[in-house]
Image 1 (tube, rainbow, N blue to C red):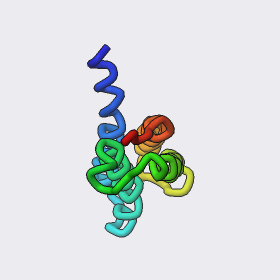
Image 2 (image 1 turned 135 degrees about the horizontal axis):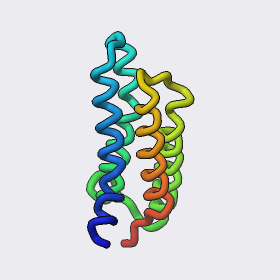
Image 3 (image 1 turned 180 degrees about the horizontal axis):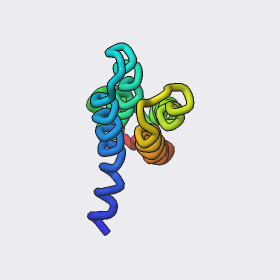
Image 4 (image 1 turned 180 degrees about the vertical axis):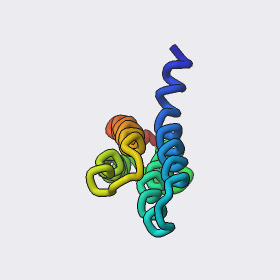
Amino acid sequence: MKQLVLMLALFPVLAFCVAAIFELRATTKPAGKLRNLIPAILGLAAFGLSLDPQGILHVSPASSVTLSRVMTLLSAMIACSGVFITYSRRSTAVWMACGGLVMLFFWIFNRVVV
């Protein structure tokens, strides 16, 4: 059971890294690569913030709700990034959507208790 939870917890990192690798290997212009990498970078940043929000921000129980709502919205935008950005491969959009949806699930139930 612990291995399943660990795999689920690390799935967004895997999804965002695979999507970033696919986009880095694409034969597009450098500006297009950067545009396509922004959601993956934001996804990795959101994952890092979900691990330790107290390490980066001063989070109280009252501000935890606001942080969770903002990061839920950001995760939803990352999951829907395939609608706004034309990726080089369809599988990249699928990886970004799956990673974003798992991050969305994490942030919906994430609350900091001080």
